Length: 597
Image (cartoon, rainbow, N blue to C red):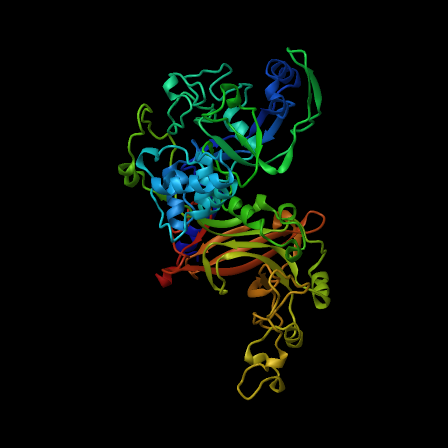
């Protein structure tokens, strides 16, 4: 007979929607084809008229159509009040625009710098560099506080690394260059987010009308009509915006030559550098033409300046962005592959906790901007993100074994087989595992002797009597030394810290130094089946107070291995296997059995 709880569970599984990040704080950009770049003929005409900008204009050629997947993007740049939550929570360096530096300290800076450079001027950028070096100097006892009159102004003086740290903390990312273009342009061929013709009254630049607003950074959404087809404001002017893309040539770029109106010749070969990052949108110190959608420039990632900020974005799949950022620190030797190439991020499996600050609690901290700058209201969709938590897994796209038996034979003579990664911002109780990013490796059943020979341990009841000392513990001589030089990555997995039950299937959790720090028992022996028959899912099992995981790992010839196991995430308040804690309604929930209620 079917119980009511079973029927409820079955109904919920049938109705569960696709995994999806909530849209709070974002504009959703649908998938589509977008025009990217400028036609060479158009660029040549512009270069002929303004040869001083030849390389900048040449770098945005040629024009092509790019297919973009759907994604989410912030309706405005990250504001100072948004960034403040991150700084207060993490202790990150506050921007120099928040610094309270006494005038006598500024004069001392000038005097010291002029000893080596008589022409030194304490510009905002120079002060920002000094602040980065001295903001924690105990002798100076410097203080900072975000002024209320810039609460809604885009945060600036943030490097690409600063922006990335914010994104990591909030479970977000920056948009790619092509995503940024799609959010600004949509399906059409407009030059500016608001249309084809430039309007100086809609863009914060060096000649804004009225002119008393020229050369001034303005609060976000100061010009509501400066909005893209999808409702994103300020993608033209105000501050440049970091993207996650390297400054490489656009697809099919070729150098070319232009004869200018002045009779000179310009050879167009921009200096592309993929280690720098593309910035988009122009700023309040640039001329209006720079705020065109196709303008692109490359900037060193450690750059901080008064006209550079950023906008956040998110994939639609929960935990995907957090895992992609975390995977950048995985050692390819531990994973036995390149993380960015070999991990299947498109099928990321995980749960996330998204948090937001109540806007009513922060609005009293805002003040009107200094005159003559008019006040503004946050754009529709505006939200302030708070600390993000997640538990997630990403499988490798493929492991090249045609059967579990071949995996077992490989492991008998070598190491466990890496099958994916685990990224968690919360601790696990079972197995015991601190927050972090790890590699998961498949370990087929081993006998007691093999486990001990690899440096691992087994429960006392499995140890041969001659291997147990009078104290009942494993002899020190049989243990492998855990000492490894900092930065060294051993070729073979170090089993020193794990206890394994003989003849069981496990997933070993490996740290960055190839050490097994935990073992997760598999509840079912993996088999190689057709990929459509292998589930890839996660369930919050309230009945057993655990997460029930079924992870699919690709195999050869359109088949896949299925790994089933359980974990229990926890925090200081106890188990996180509770209804309503994780964000979303797309995952399975197994209710408490009727007899246990």
